[in-house]
Image (cartoon, rainbow, N blue to C red; front, side, top):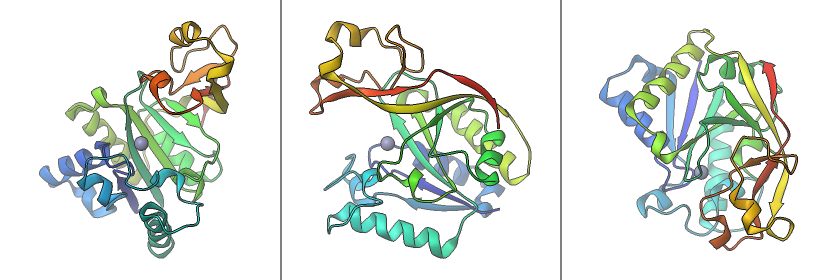
Length: 234
Ligand SMILES: [Zn+2]
């Protein structure tokens, strides 16, 4: 089993860096199974999310921006090294539970990883030129910044250990399917304040990635909407 760990796809999100540092510090035997790559080294060095363009929107893009070229390199690297699973590590300022992100549930290897992970919230996203849509074996971690503790890092390390040892942790998952964006023009600011991520709202959907001062951002949407939770066994 070979795991490709992609840290800092967004240069200011340090979950993958901290996880790898912890494994190094402990001289973990898991290191033998892990290949480590910094997704966006230029943005990481500058403590920025990205420099020219969001790397996680560049996997299907054409152009000559730094991130588009970097996305091409990473895709080629995955093709050449053919890891069993690719983990893309993110953090967020949003208030939300720790979650795993997939493009779909196709393929046994992804389900095997989901079963091995202690995280029970799984979000299925639509492909938006991000890495989860690139290969059939990519899983994202998305955790709030303030949840990144040594305890969480050890729990994630245990996920990886379970995976390589063919062990299960939590096969029962809360599964959410992303349906689209929540546009500002459709929701009052007052209403938007009542959103709780990953909890069904009166408006009939589950808000995802809302908050984080969304109203101040230069976007026409507040976050995403997902379908109601399904309890599934992967
Ligand atoms: Zn991110």
